[in-house]
Image (cartoon, rainbow, N blue to C red; front, side, top):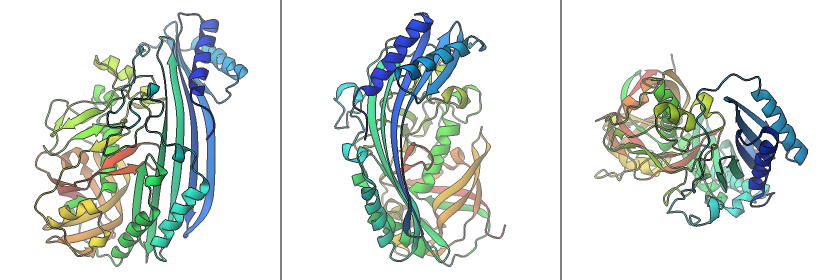
Length: 482
């Protein structure tokens, strides 16, 4: 881990000084400085084949001058590099079109930290969601978890990755807002393969020490073994239990296409705040600060300097809110919810820490057939199913209709037929075409698992806290034959 506490905020302040000197005090400026260290250990054919590490400090400047807005960025952080960034960004404003949607700068405001987090009282949120051991993790520590995963798979072919991320960031603007913070993330994602059948296990955490490769490897292997010799079922509408990995895909699509304030303003979202759009058992929260149950917090401010806070999007089935950056909030006549990002003005402000609240399951005893392959919180839900499918994972999901959020995609990494609470057979992968909000609509949620699993997004730093989910109906539209 390189750098020191406060270094990013000093860089941001230098850029603000340069803007004032070169553009005058009438210019509005905001500066993000982000130092990120990503380390990745990948394995395939049950052996580590790649270990990479990348350390980058990037400075991003957004200038609003004479009604025009331009952004620029640089990884050259000496005085000459920062001056060049300001000069070329300022020059670009002179030839840019007017920006009528400019929302102004975030005003000075204190950060809001999670009361449940042990670092919640520390200055500026600097240590919030931060674990020193993870930030300093060596390749050997990631390799140990890979080794444990491979050994626990007991001879099955394995592949996947273990990664750690350390971020130290700061924000400053010419209106006087100045904040800083640090955060860490660890994640592991692996599969085991047996006779062409795959099983998966994933987990995200704030601390590398919370990842147990042996537990994950054993789970992936059990799923692979249980998924061998699948039968083919006809397409149709099936009662399903979705394990947390599958539920995380629902949350990701809700974040990108459902609760996006820009899409809502353009009437391209299903969300209708104040309306009961979901089953009363459904509560969905975007919680970037983490909680006692899910302590993996993120930076306590967004990329426009707005303090982040937990945001209830759905409570007891009723849609409550959508996410906003400063631009979409201005268009909607409200305030930012702390979801500004480098691309939010173009692509929309997206939640990246959605949690579907868990709910204790009453009454049903766990089934026995194939139980070793079932995520623990899904077992009571499976036991309560008369006839349906247990689905481990979804992938290659694509939006067919953003307004109703009809999604098409495929199952993978394990599907099983359940009869009278018992897993009776593996099932070959199937295609589905399903409206995600409709699947969770009033009367359609038959049960929610009693615990959530924190799952990583494979290509970003979003995290989704997902329980298992028992749904009355899922529209399977194709099987292995077509």
